[in-house]
Length: 200
Ligand SMILES: [Fe+2]
Image 1 (spheres, rainbow, N blue to C red):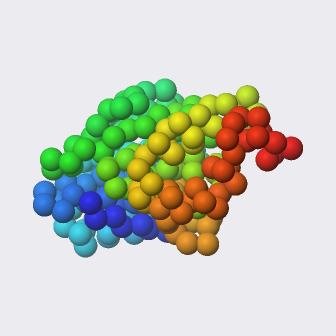
Image 2 (cartoon, protein in one colour; image 1 turned 90 degrees about the horizontal axis):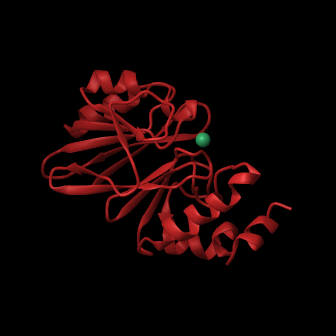
């Protein structure tokens, strides 16, 4: 896939345009703030956007998503438990196809109940679940869910998978899971108790 990483808005958000090379079928990951730069990136790449996917319900990720989807003739996609309005509700394991290539939905609750990551075999779009160098905020009662999403879902992907987060909070805009695992303290712990001790 061709990945365009677009910084948008005032909260260091990253939006992604993900294009399958042969068919030019594409999806957009999140859309808050402004749609202009996203539409321009789509035009430049000559892509046909099929899906505008919400990684989770927070306004900085979805406030312009349905407007963007209407403009691009795409479907709004979100997790089945999401409060946002959408055309297609997905659960863990569902695949969205771009050309012949599958993009798999991974349900990763913790930051929010409706948080999802998208995995295309090489890249993972992590929304506010995992950033470069840190992780998304979560409420205490969701700690176990967050730990599980990070350790038993995201970290089970191949080590060479490239992480594309929902915000530009790191030293670099993206890096591999293997690199992240070696330096991110929240990924280095071995159980929920040690995970929680990092917040004490
Ligand atoms: Fe968020």
